[in-house]
Length: 424
Ligand SMILES: Nc1ncnc2c1ncn2[C@@H]1O[C@H](COP(=O)(O)OP(=O)(O)O)[C@@H](O)[C@H]1O
Ligand SMILES: [Mg+2]
Image 1 (cartoon, rainbow, N blue to C red):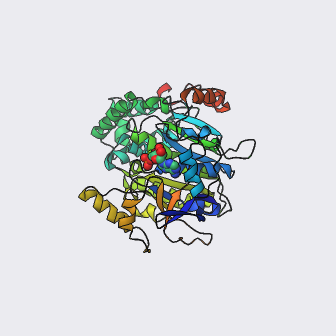
Image 2: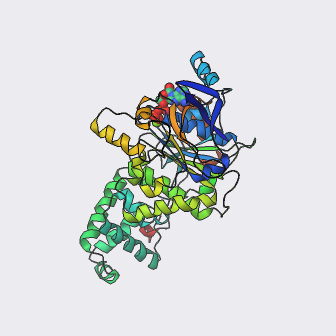
Image 3: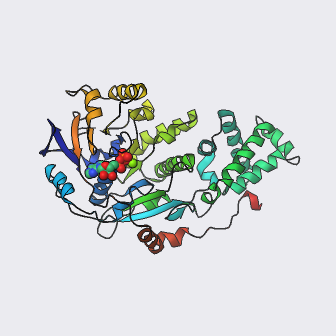
């Protein structure tokens, strides 16, 4: 099982009472929540390290390098060792096999791309922040391109098709499609131009990333940790979160059915998950809910990471079997409301959760997990283990060297010239 930490009883950790998630329950998904600076990312690292050590590959977004330390052995000090001893953790500095990826050319990593056509109109509408009318118009454009035998590989390809439909020459075609106004086509075209100018154009193209590349183990049988380097989410929040969703959908489409197994095929950590749901259309949400529900039987476990459970729609939250809730603040009336909303998502317990959730120390959490029988365990105040990889980011030079040495760089670094619509 994954060791999360030890029970805290009357303020003191009980090294003899471990809090765990069985490997076989990881595909029942989970949530790691809490205010900024309360220990979410370290919890994520603790979980990811043990998943890897257990022979299961990991995929996670690495925001501002917070998780990159997993590739470097941790440094110990007296305080750390006192903490780990108190919770029964036999701490050993350990580096985990890591592959770094980057979206297009941003950040240090093997550049990964997707084609516009594989992204599809619904995900692309989320990225472009289109409204429902524009979303269905974009679907019609994709449909038109497919029927006309035009490939949509790059943003340039899509622009070429939209610009054609917007031109005098394309007007008759536009009319023939039906349900597509030239005003909406004009809006989509402008959004595409702005989006490409923001630097997103380098992300769309070929060779497209093969999702099965994240399902690898190293020569000693440990799961490879794939980290998507995201220097700043503010940069392109929609692209980042939608791309993670794209990967999940591709994994779902690619992997065979395995049902419930002893060990999952992959554990996927979805950080800054609120971005996925912000401004999401009905169709987009439907894709998320369906994917989360069905990917379980393909052996993929997803852990969403966000500030409060209320960032996640109820349909999704109901499917998250394990919950690790770090401290919440209660400074403002709004905080207090969010706190009560969070408490309402937990089963009744012996704790006064409204009280406890504001009192948790950094690196402590309220935990409930799925046990072997698939039932939720009682709520437990838990002191979380310390990561055995570094808590500091791995140095940029080390990451650059790892990327240069990766066989995947040879596979993905060079952009293929297109046979898409723009060339036609
Ligand atoms: N499990 C833990 N063991 C030891 N220290 C921790 C642990 N969790 C958090 N910390 C300390 O708290 C800091 C903030 O934690 P972090 O996970 O980055 O918070 P968040 O992701 O919620 O913003 C860390 O840099 C570390 O010093
Ligand atoms: Mg964090």
